[in-house]
Length: 485
Length: 126
Image 1 (cartoon, rainbow over the protein chains, first blue to last red):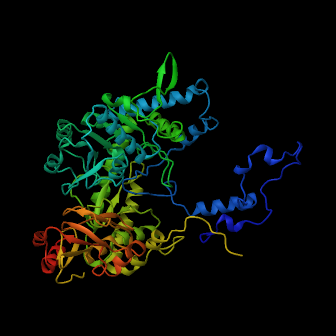
Image 2: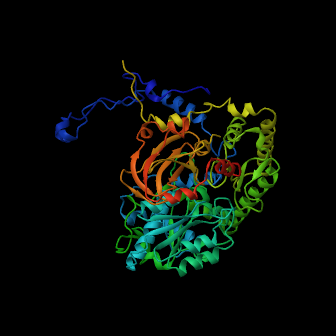
Image 3: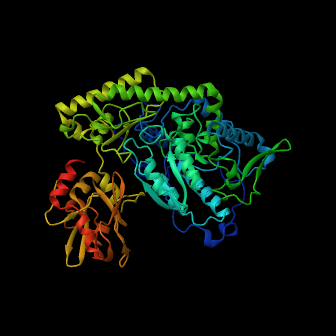
C-alpha cells in the first residue's frame, strides 16, 4: 500500500455513514429557538462522508507511511528522539476522563502529580520553583524572557532592553527574546561554538537584560568557562537564561542552577521521553531561582492545609500563558518516566547518551569531517564528508539515509558549521543499532566516491522522493480545495 | 562561482555598485549558492537612514533565514519590489537583482570593502 495517497475528502460519497441512529424519540425543536440566527452556519460544513471501514483503512494506510522512534533509529540532532516507554502511555489513560474545569477538590490526584513533578524538575535543574504551564520549548523560552523583563521592570531598571544571544544558538532564542520585546545583541562564538569571553565582555553593559545560553552548546560541547560567564553577566546586572534543549547530556550530573543560571526551560518531550516528532504535543516547563519565583506564570500550584490548590493570587506574575495548566497528558508521561527511572536511572541515561554520541563520533570520523575534534556530549556534529571532491552534500547524505531506511540526522544546523550533519543517538539505542547505522553511513561515504549521482537523486523507494521545497515554501497549499464540478 | 569586476564586496557576501552618489546593494553569487533556493525577501523601508552594518533586509531560503547587512551608510531611496513576489530572482541573477539603493552618506566607507580579486581570494578560504 506504499502508494496510497488519497485525502479523506476524496473518499467522501454523499450519504455514506459510519453510524446508524434510532429514530428520534423527542419532539423536534426549531433551530432558531436554540441558536441565534447570526451564529448559525449558512453554508454546508463539507465534512467527509465515509464508512468506518473507509476511515480505518485511510488512517492505517497513511500511518504506515510514517517513520517514528517506534519504527527505527531516529538520530535527529538537537531533538533527543529517545524511546517513549509504553508504561507512560498506560499511566496517561488513567486521567482521560478529567476535565480542566472540574472543582479542584475533585482533582487532588492530578494536582498532586503536577506539584510533585514540578518539585522533581526543580531538584533536577537546581531551581527553586518550576511552572508546568508552557506548551512547548519556545513557549517556555518566551515565559523565561517575560520573567526576565518583569524582574528588571520591578527594579525600575528600564534601560535593560537588550538580550545577548551567541551566533551558535537555537533560532528560537532570538525569536523568543524579540517577541518578549527585547532587542538582540548577537555575539560571535569561538570555533567550537563556545562563548567567546572577550566578545561577551565587550557586549556587557547597563542596557543588557541578560543572556540566553545552551550548555552543552549546539555543537555538543560543554562550556568550560560557564562559572566565569555567569559571574561576568551577574556582575553587569544581567540575568542568565538556560535553554534546556540539551539537558539530556547533563541530567543528574550537573545542575544549571549550580552553574549560576537564573531561569531555565525544559523540554519534557525531549529529555523526559514523552512522544514528539509529529508536531507535538510538547511541554516546556519554566524554572527559576528564588529571587524570580513571584514572576512565574499563574496559577501557582501550592500545597496548603493538607490540600493542593491553584493559587491565582500572584500580583507580580507574568500572568496566564494559556487556558488551564499546560499539556497535562505530557506531564503524566514525564512524571511516570522520572519515577520509573529514579535518581540512578536518570543519571545513567545521560551517561549512556554521551557515550553513544562519542561512539558514533569515533566510528564515523574517518569518513565524515568532524566539526570539532574532541570529546562531545550527547550529540556530534560533522561538516559533510571528509572527501570534498565528490560534490556530495549534507543533504545528499541525508537523502541517502532515507533510502536505506533511516530517519535523517539534523542537517544545516548549527548555522556556524558548513554542511552540518548533527547526530544525536540518545541513550535508548543498543550497540547493535549503532553499529548498523555506522555501517550504512560508511556505505554512503563509499557510494559518494564511486557513484555520487546515485546519492544526488536518492531516495528512490520512499513514499515520496525529493520534494520541491522551494515551491512548497513559495506557493504553499494549506487547505483542501474541492475540485470544480 | 561568479564574481563581477567593478563592484565592491563585503565579508558578509554583499556587493555594492556605485553610480554617482547612489549605491546599489545586493548579495553575491557565493551567498545565494550557500543559501540555496530563496523563498522570501524582506526589504528595508524607503527613507530609512541606515548606518554601516545595520540590517538592510532578510533573505530566507529553504535552509535558513539570514540578515543582510548594509556595507555602507546611507538613506534608502529605492527598494527592489520585484523580489517580494519573485524571491527566486536572487538565485537566477544575484548581480542584476539588487535589494535596495542607498544614497551614500559616507563615501569613504567604500575604501574598507574588497575589490573583485580580493573577494575571490576571500571566498576561496571560506
